[in-house]
Image (cartoon, rainbow, N blue to C red; front, side, top):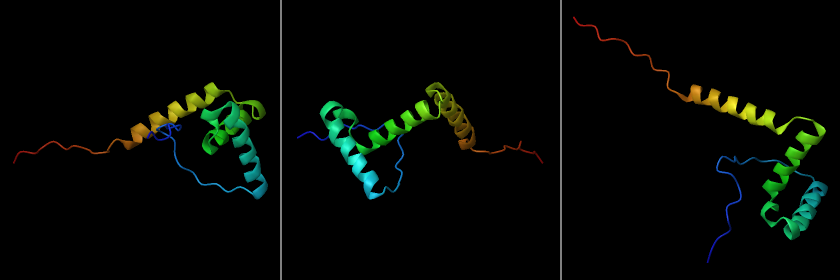
Length: 94
C-alpha cells in the first residue's frame, strides 16, 4: 500500500494560524472544488500558498522575481551567519 505523495517542498516550514469559522468554511469550499480540477493543489498549505502569491502579485503588485531575489539574498546572509566565528591565533614558541 502506497502512502500519499509528498506535496510540500523540503524547505517548507510549519506555521500556526487561526481562522474564524467563516474562513474555515471558505477554505473547505476551495478544497472541495480544487479536488475536482486540481487534486495536487487541494491541500490547505497549497491553497494558502496560492492565495498568498495571488495577493502579492495581483493586489500588492510585487513581481515574483523580486521575492526570488529577496530569498536568495536572505539565504546568502543566513549562510554567512551560520559559519562559526572562530579566530585562530598563531602558536607562540617559548
